[in-house]
Length: 440
Ligand SMILES: Cc1ncc(COP(=O)(O)O)c(C=O)c1O
Image (cartoon, rainbow, N blue to C red; front, top):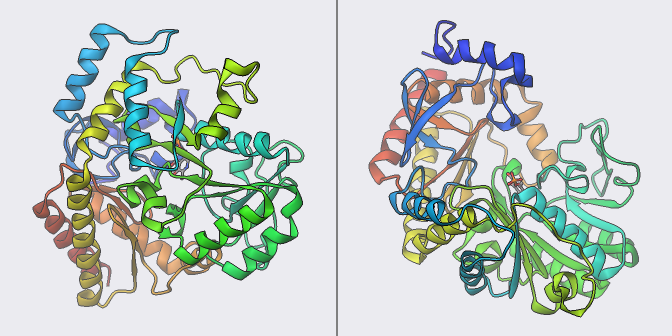
């Protein structure tokens, strides 16, 4: 049972905190009083260092679309490792992965690879500024886009700092350079008329609008078609770039969120699933934009783009295999499993007469332990983060699932991977119902 002060994970945590602040290298993998340490994994299952087996419903925060150690991906990595690990030359593998991506997402005619979603978004922001010669980037309040400077603005502002709902303040976390907040315009998610007005007010200085069309922190709330259509329209009129961060939302449609929502951004940032489980990022867009920014054949490119491990052959080989395996049939099957989980969780809430809201789309599922529907970051803060009861229920639910063989993302995220079966989903639903009953 977790927590257990005699467990290997608890002991390892003690050892880890001496050399790693918080005992690890990534805030999202910590939960109190100590995180469990992973030993090995296979398919959708993971074993911790105490030998406890659990179903993995995090999938490395969505990156592992095929779960752990898919035999074909492992074979591709092994073959690649024997041939070529890393080299200061372009490779066949990067061309092949670029071909798959450009085939699948029509607005990406050309692509450049890097090593993380953070880097991809950072390059996308610089691209928007370089193309337009303007300073300001608009982003959604509460949206996470990695840890670059502009991306860090207003990710989790407190109510005392967030300002007017019709003109949200630009809240800079510690460590952000001077000027970053002033150059960032903060927009409330899905608020069409408020955002139209703000974009028009700042049009002459606006380089681009950055949007993750499926914000995880808002309970995997997809952007509405009306909202993204307005963003497309207003950015065009303002002469600014529409930048889609599809690092996470590539799971929303076979052709990404942009395919599902029927909108054509100018620049797209990718990451996670396109790397087949290895570190990856990519920025892509129309040929004329990409060539103007990155092509060295016409003198110095507008944007310098180095990176010792950019397009490293190991990631390219793994990503290529993962994307080949994630065909339309595979996408549809995974989305159907997501529907089954969402429907079942809603039924479990009804049967247990428990407060809660089930959200998400395709292979991403969210359970918030509050009845309030959420649209914006402020709704999430009001209904979840400052709601002591909802917080306590989320903690109880997470702990129950952890102790009954399911690891999910706190406070209520389930991310699916292709090795999962209908039976796995039904097992989780049975446990979810038992958890909700016990919590009543
Ligand atoms: C929407 C979005 N953008 C960017 C990132 C950053 O990606 P990475 O963790 O690969 O740096 C994330 C990571 O979770 C994300 O969800």
